[in-house]
Length: 135
Image (tube, rainbow, N blue to C red; front, side, top):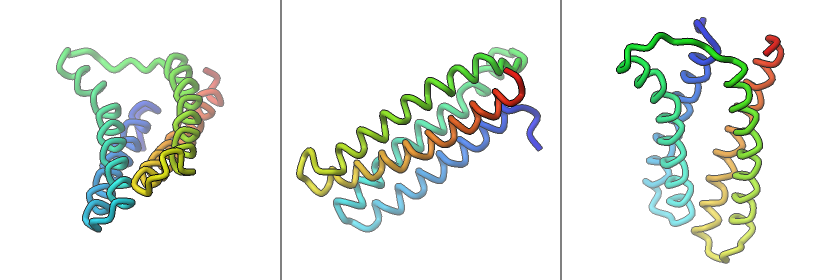
């Protein structure tokens, strides 16, 4: 279906990013500090994910460069991101368990845990998939 792993990654990350932003706006609708905090995290992470997914092809098109897939480099980036994602999850847990003792921050913690968990699974899956191809 996809012409390259990079295209597949960009597509899925774009869908996740847009879905997160829509979910974030939905959470903000409830007018509850806990849900507002989760919604804020979903909006911000969704925006960043969508930008990460869409920026490279956009700038490549502007510059007129051809797409050259570098799976070795991509695998290294995904492995580094997987480790960072575990850090995000840990920070989310610390925030959620009440380091600040404010319910609003607990919502931020849940938002970070959910977004970080998706990215940890996503990045690890694609790093393993690329490794299985021999890169």
